[in-house]
Length: 142
Image (cartoon, rainbow, N blue to C red; front, side):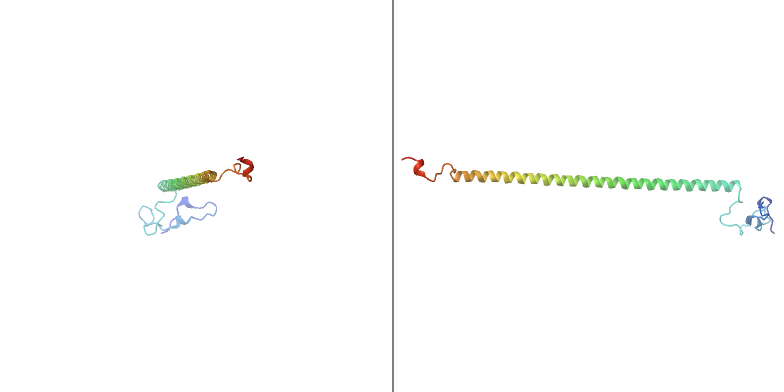
């Protein structure tokens, strides 16, 4: 038995919508459980269906919002970790540079001291050039 619900007639074409041409059982005018689609729990446009869709939409929006917040928190956490790693790496490079500069300065100072020591040793072994004369007889009268 097919019946058309008066509210489901298209005003432009005068035809009934597909939902109104379904076979109805004789029990309270509801669709037979065998003929219901899995998504059609209540008649279209009913307050319960609208409420269910509204609740479902709110839940989906809330889940999307939570997913976005989680994504942004993870992105922020990864960014902070990267910045921390970069800062640590920069600090390590600066410390290495400082150590190399100190070693270089120490090596320069050691060479300078070594040269001074060598000059002192040479100065003690050899007489100064002014004290030596090519003509000792002229410098030292006897």
